[in-house]
Image: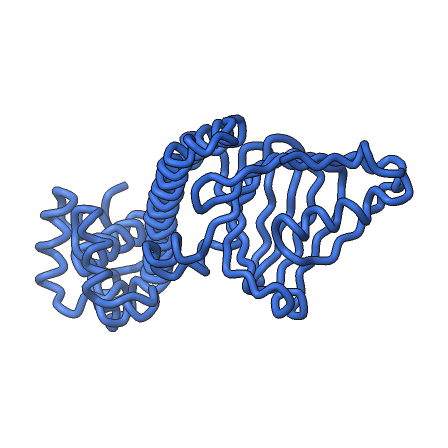
Length: 309
């Protein structure tokens, strides 16, 4: 099915366009800074099993769906938008997702959103039940930009693009459409799973970095323990142990190594006047243990380092 403003009187084009998109997808308000006679837009859509796929081309316009719109059509779907050209900006659930060519976003029909588009885009209308039952906390994936370089994004983009080009007008093609729809949903969910794993890794790295920076800044504090460091990182002691385990060490072995490095630097730079001062300054309570650990780590005694010219 194709809708094109070229067949509409110039002064009625934008109003017609708003009615077309609202009728095919979601009730929303729209505005544009493009004059009616210059507003040229096109929407080609078809059903693909339980999905509806479309190609949309339009100049800059601004969509806004509010609570009244949500109540009015009460749809329970996600919209997937894959940009082919141009730029998009989606705001929903307090998050802002900026799209460039090849980027993918999801938005939720059950909540207000603003979506600014100056683009050619491919849209997929997805019943929420198909997605929600297989994805934990689906709201976290809404208004997030999946870049064109994200794992599985090129595969999903190719499948959606091919789906919009197929001619499924023959009823005999219904089974083909349903199978392709299932494949699109499968790849979308797989992409979301990989994205979440990567985000989890990034978050864990940021927490570990926070712990390391805090420990280095307070290396002389004898109260540095796995418990105190886990509180700084906002993680459990078990999670903290996993983080340090990935570095091939434990939290306390790492702290001891950093204390030894700090004491060696202080001795070399004559920032301390004695071995005792170096040991106590950097959290060592037992002078004998400090001296043995120092020699094991650096191959010389603290005294040799202090008196080295």
